[in-house]
Length: 102
Image (cartoon, rainbow, N blue to C red; front, side):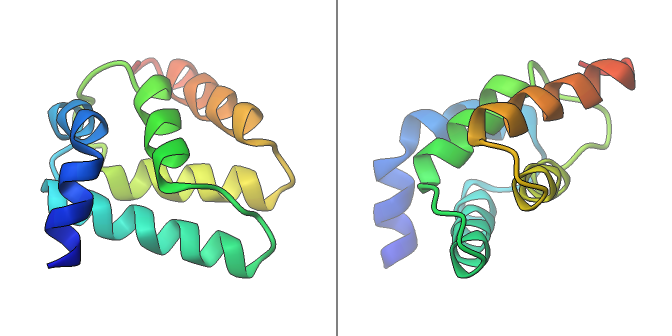
């Protein structure tokens, strides 16, 4: 189906993200689509690849119980506060660094 096609299209990002988060590749694709859709409805237009690349660059390794859902939620929160994509990624990374987990 559509999900398999997307998994193939974003293979590189998913290879990286699935090493860092517990969710399946399919769940990561679904959550990223949902995040893009929700942000879009709020006037923040960002592509799936951009979201995944941003989270991948902010999170350096697998972190205890941290899920992709939590990372993407944090990213969305920063974007809703008016952050650019770059600032949201930097803020996510700073948050993880502050927690001493990155």
